[in-house]
Image (cartoon, rainbow over all chains, first blue to last red; front, side, top):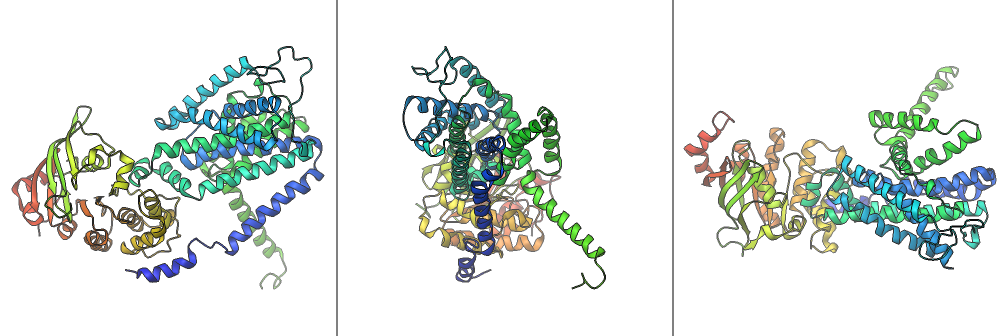
Length: 359
Length: 246
């Protein structure tokens, strides 16, 4: 048996594991460079068409992040996330028309109100899992869609719903004054998304993340460890809904006009498919999912190919993920790239004249 | 409260799953220290643990633990109160590190957060887990995962540690090591242990007293060596498991 003091001394160096270590620093540096490039470089390189598409990617990366927390961290499958997004967009639009609150405050309030609504949707999750939870959330999403169709999105009218039936001169939903143009708004959306990713990461690395990991693997083990599984499941729904509500607020400003037809319940199914393909266990997976969901259709439209083909592609993709790569592209792509790199290296060595590649 | 005779008093405990009666008016007392609980497959041992953990609600009966009505405590609060357990199929959380697996129990207890690291490391070293605590559990071997589970059960100051077949599937030398760990639990934690296992040499080596369940009923209880010689115990096991009475 080990001596406690001895072990403690070793651990003092390694725990928390390699905090200022090279790997963590390198990772942080990569993220920082990538973020800087996306904020400063990307808007210069892209046409307005693709900047708008990338704004949608930023919005849906948050939506995918929320679903990723539920599916990947806690093991709760929700098929109602697009309806939650619609709630966030609705609340934000209503606030933006009715008040002159600063945009960040609107996002925060939209996130909080959506959080409450999302927790109500999550209530069945306290009793159900798997297919039945998926079914219930899908039906709740359907119900929300029906309500939205009748209430309509606010378009500058008065009263609680803020809907102006005549709809001849519909004022656009406002954007923050610092980000009225499309490139600026794209940057704004990226910053908000980055903050949401930080929020999720902070959860995953601390107490709730540990509790979720336990719940996902074994609820009895979680209970036996003293974890209030009900509380932590609701917490997961709260976090996911908050993030999705904020995404709805960003979406409202991005598109200027919102229609209930833009939030069909079946989009939640596609969302789950791309989240699984991107990788539900990784934060990168949410970004990949958003690229699949928003950039790919934009590319296809630009090339004159119908985006409907994507349904088939996503179907094949999910099948592939479920059979061979359960952690999705975020896990598989680096491995495949490394394998490709080794192959190319081996090929280069073989092709290189003797001696050159030996040392 | 500890030390005044029986620590756990079970009275007329009855559990039914549909038409199946898993525990049938079970009455038994457990003394402080390490107690064995044995019986053929399906005798109700795990069901009894599930009652103590709060996963199963009995239709009748009472469990008093150190003078408190255990059944009135909500399941997730029982760990905070002091009930800890391992599972028949080991349940160390794969995604988390060894440290986090154990710290997770500590952070949901009433224990002081300032002593968390020390307590967790002390539990890890107590079970003799010779790995970097930052190692992810999914990279560990089966025996090491068992030890992670045991470390989770002993961290802090548990009052009652329930071990459900901790030696199942372990090679002999690991079982021997586990036996030494189990014998050390009362001294390490100040709590008591109930050990369920089919390995009679492990039970004999760890437990001063042993209770025997068969078809949900207590058929014998007392000093381990005497219980293992009991006619009824031997006949209950006959044909179902090989029994070695040393």
